[in-house]
Image 1 (cartoon, rainbow, N blue to C red):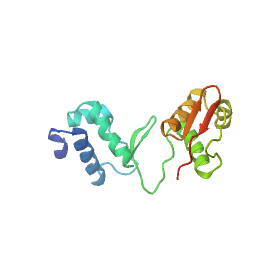
Image 2: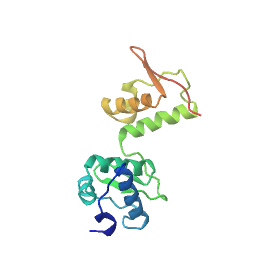
Image 3: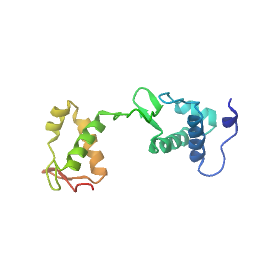
Image 4: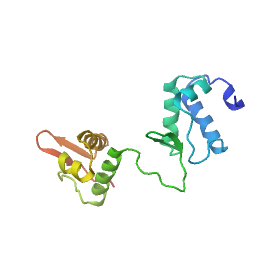
Amino acid sequence: MRAATSRWLTGGLVYRQLADRIRAQIIAGEYPRGSTLPSEPALAERFRVARSTVRRGLALLEGEGLITALPGRGRVVNDPDQEMGPAYRYQVIANDLREQIRTGALVAGARLPSEMALRRHHGASRNTVRQALDELRREGLIVAAHGKGRFVRFAPD
């Protein structure tokens, strides 16, 4: 076991300590760019913490852009020279709509394309389209009017 991980993590905000240790290992080259981090259970065992603590620590590193969660692959150390695309189909759809709002193709008050139109355009399922729309709603970019559709709430600066 590595010396840096053999000590128990204790005290408050253990997930931050865990993130600090993993960040240091990434910077030291123990996890090079493009490599996959160990699984949550493996990290929980190594650091002797709960999986939820590992998840919170990894979420900090994801928020910093240091790692990315990829479906079927796990969490991967980002390569700053290579731009990572969206990991999920709903993110592609949400990004497309976000860009249309940002560029003015969809202005404040404009009605978004229907779920069916988005499904056809992106070749996605209804649930995938709804997940994309829900993400935009949570961000405050769109609003839904029952029985009328979804509308652009405002254009971001």
